[in-house]
Amino acid sequence: MKTKIPVAKNQKLEATIVDLTYQGMGVAKVQGYPLFCDDALPGEVVELHVLKAGKNFGYAKVLKRLVTSKDRVEGSGKEYLQTGIAPLEHLAYPEQLKFKQKLIKDLLVKAHLTDLKVDETLGMAEPYGYRNKAQVPVRMIDGQLKAGFFRRGSHNFVPLENFLIQDERIDEVIQQVLAILQKYQLTAYDETTHQGLLRHLMVRRGHYSGEVMVVLVTNQKKIPHLEALVSEIMATCPDVVSLQQNINSKQTNVILGEQMVLLAGKEFITDQLNGLNFEISARSFYQVNPSQTEKLYQAAIARAGLTGKETVIDAYCGIGTISLSLARHAKKVYGVEIVEAAIADAKKNAALNGLDNLVFEVGAAEEQMATWQEAGIKPDVIMVDPPRKGLAPSLIESAVKMAPQKIVYVSCNPATLVRDIKHFMELGYEVKQPILPVDQFPQTAHVESVTVLERVI
Image 1: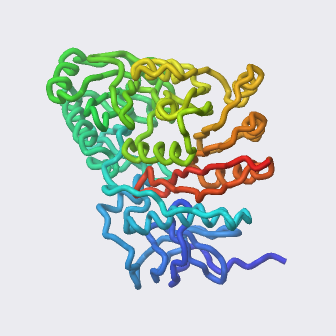
Image 2: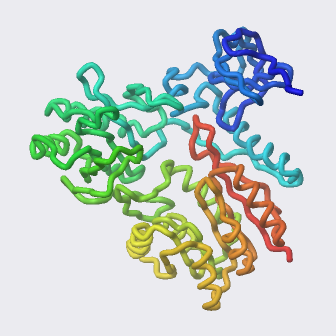
Image 3: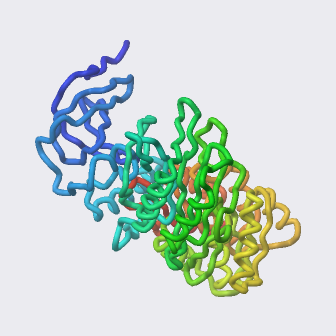
């Protein structure tokens, strides 16, 4: 017998918001049937317009708030919610931190891991203007070059001058560069016709160094008035130490193309992390919230209990940000990463800091760990910081075969973390310390965390 859906498309109804989804959307229940809606917080009574009614859940739009949550803050503007730049900016920051702790707790309960504890989320004193990197699309609006973002789930462009969570100087540089490009009548890329020159602006800024990199992502190599334009950008923005062009002529959503051209300055900016120096190129993966990354790495190292005598493997080492931090607290660090350019950067960064107790290899982590095991390397600690998809079962098995005393798991996705914890537990590891959530991305629904797994078999 078919279950009757208790709501219909275009229906208007009154409901109470009972929860938030992992994406930060409000959840209303109508006879047990969930309706998801933006800009709604638990405890609020709202008038809803049903946009879509699927078999198991639907989507609705808030027409009116009849009761407002005490935790609601009047945000900077609807566009931050609509574009997904800051989907939690309407929720008071202390409540955002509780929401992130609850995300992990709820997933542990669902996985029947109710014995595991979750610490309070480590937050920021100033939870705005923290991003050290911007990649913004550029479009022509009423004859003007505008940077902005797309509405969530669409390609509708929303022009923005203040991105709320980006370093304020980055926002300023974007506007200064756009004004110069406008002056020289550069055109913006049009997705439908595949015409126009400027696709994206990418801006990176060193949190401590203040050095700025600007990358003009263009649809073709030739930039009109190039010499004048370059000298004006460099004169207007004296903190720009790297001005580059990236050529991407493909019809794709991928931002950077393969070809980079140095227009002025150097090919990288420098910055510090926990007192270590790093060279960051246009393509480098470098954590976007440096002050919280420092806290995240300090917590991971402290919880690993390093004394200076340990051998450590960093299984997703990137350009060496965490490996170099580990190297100051361990006897030897082995880093592996599948991206060749990242390993070249990691070696350069180790030399830059005068650290010689590191070995970096290019390869898939599970294969490289098997090679190291055959060579008789016995790690005391394995550090993993995987992408959102978490760890492959083969990597978990490779790590366990090396029998380290501790596995420190830095996660950016609680769902895959909980799945992987279960796998480690089946293979003889236990979580004895509480999991630590770290708020790397305030005003968004993302949460990072540190989990220590200890060998019990």
